[in-house]
Length: 295
Image 1 (spheres, rainbow, N blue to C red):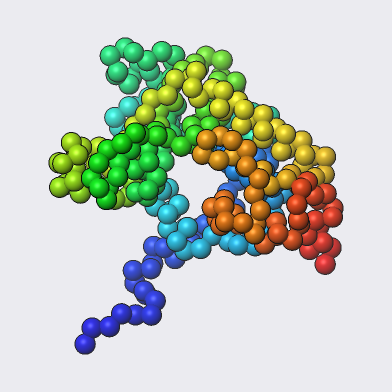
Image 2: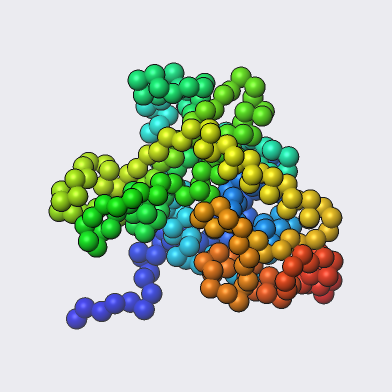
């Protein structure tokens, strides 16, 4: 008689390893307190991470699965890119003041053929893996109805992250000029063949998308976010945890509260700690993390 186990024993092997790896703190690219990949994230959350506070809500198995699959795809794609574009560089680190990170790939404009339309010496490539909801927003699909509306393109926070990498790389390498960001998107579930045919979607476009973004669009967004992170670090240097200010999908500042329903708080590793520390800018020495350190 068929039965389902209370918990998968064999099928869970990969996610178990990914979950263990997710608990290991990842250093920033150049040992800075802040990282490019936190673009648009809550200032308070970035403060806790910079101070290496132990999470009160560690990542669960589902989160580890999503991020782990993303890492596997990133590494596999980088391997393939290296064969298609031999001069490509990967995980190129850079720093801007006290923020650092590394890009997915840096490619020569001489090697990427777009009929000579690309300027500058290099392209910075950033890949994002995502579920169907985020992908469909980018390309303007309504899978349920089988229609195509207005595409939104890549998330502004992803553009900011890639742009911050570009600014950092150019700042440290005067011979490199990055005029264009290339944003790649991969969704885990392809559009069905039937709906693809009805919607006029062909080939790899059923699950891949790629966008070329000029500097006049990405540079202001990225520089503004670097300035915001400079302010976050200044607050930390002055001995204060910043207020719970983040940016939404439109790049507008928003006030968060751990008792609210914002997705940023739902997925925050420091939600309980933040709730205890209260509103506004909080002196580090009067915060819950200082009290725990004195126990």
